[in-house]
Length: 221
Image (tube, rainbow, N blue to C red; front, side, top):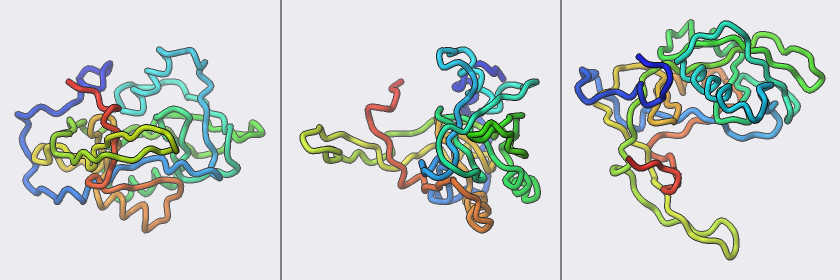
């Protein structure tokens, strides 16, 4: 499997389907809740280093092996949480407690890569890991989503359209607990419940049927 393009990991229609199909609302997006108190991380990679940023993105997808540690500094917030999100879309850094929960409960579709996370005083915060989602990637079927006209966000602004609901061909799902639908990190209900029951902090779950995406943000084939 080629590691240099996200689309290389898309599941083709001739894959053997998983026999026990869930209802679609048993899938959830796992995302950044955009809270203020938890630390917000910034990579020490140069801001203009696009090739390095692409490599970091590939590591978050589990596509590349990593021999060195990525370093992150806390530049906002005032406390560590189980999930620490970066100023980029990916990756997320997770605590050792999250890693243990995933291991003990045999959650599939993930791995970790080495990172160093420093607090605002430059002190290393121990036991954090880069989270890579290694499960398959499925293509979103936007033709199944409802298109909704939304009012302007500010007075005098323009209205805009959203897709309500994120769908994919569920018959192709192979049973993996963590995977991608296009570039959205998706988890199963048991993963969502596991995190909620153990009060894993600084992470948000949205049922896929409720997820909203601006139509203009969707790349057309």
